[in-house]
Length: 425
Image (cartoon, rainbow, N blue to C red; front, side):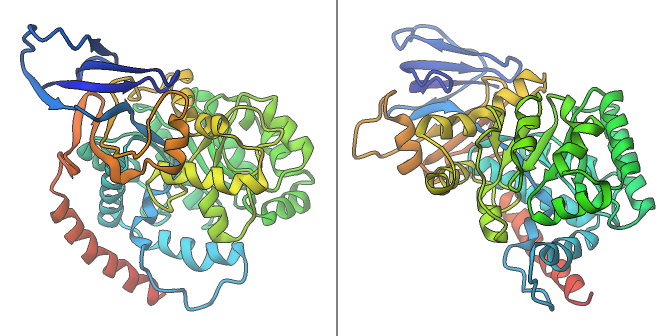
């Protein structure tokens, strides 16, 4: 089914040029057709018409780093032992949760994440998954759930030595199985939980399948302390020596506790950085600063939520004190994920991914001030419809592809089961 967005105010996401047009969107064509408004005599066969009078239409959003596996943590009780630092937050919360995941919990977590992303205008998700006691087949479960909702994906399994060599091996196996037939990345948790052997095997897979490494980098000082004591070098230096930074598909997540040498290594490499401001604030690990890292910086949510407009605002506001960030550079980081996907040949993020905004602004919205409206006015509540790969997945603020009520009812029951498993640990 083709779509005709009638009388839309179309905003080109690259130039921010405004034009009043009818827009034809097709599922089988990455490009869209902008038709003059007076071209009303044309009959569009097999086409659903959406009246966009008074509405803004622009490219949909994408998440540069997500953790769908954490979806059922919302509202979860505090751990029995109160974490005193970042390492203990991982041990008592996230590593406790991921060990309890099974196929059913992975699926519902992916479904609710995809629905959340869709409703918030994101049609493409780069996800980083962990389920150490349910590794095999986990990426396929997530992919099918995302596709059911209509969200495109770039997945990886978070391989780590924290649960022993056997499970680390399973992570690499699942990675290779998935990479054989799908666009994907090679996932690693973080330098301080990855042995030299696992790192080497992961990089071998990266080269073999022309992929990239997706890894948390210097989120906390523990990463640097362990790298220096165990390997005699700083984290980015270790990753660079191993070949991680040689791929333009590699994503280095967080990048908070870096020295100038490490920033230089990243800037001179084709690798990307994913900033996750709110997660850093929540974990009290520090503030992101893009100084010396170059232009390959994009934004993620780190599983905190699925609202990229919220991530944009957080990066901008926190950046006022801790980063050199402007309206233009904030918007560039927000949109850089599309450049990452396009330059690396990943499919599913074409121009036929759109978001329709019913934005009741009390002031004029123009090319010159649109970023200001994004930062201080437009929010996910203004999203009425979302088109993913030419297909309508949110229609008049309702998920159009799956029965959201049924899934949320099920996720509520499964969340209680998960919390119960965690509390009896």
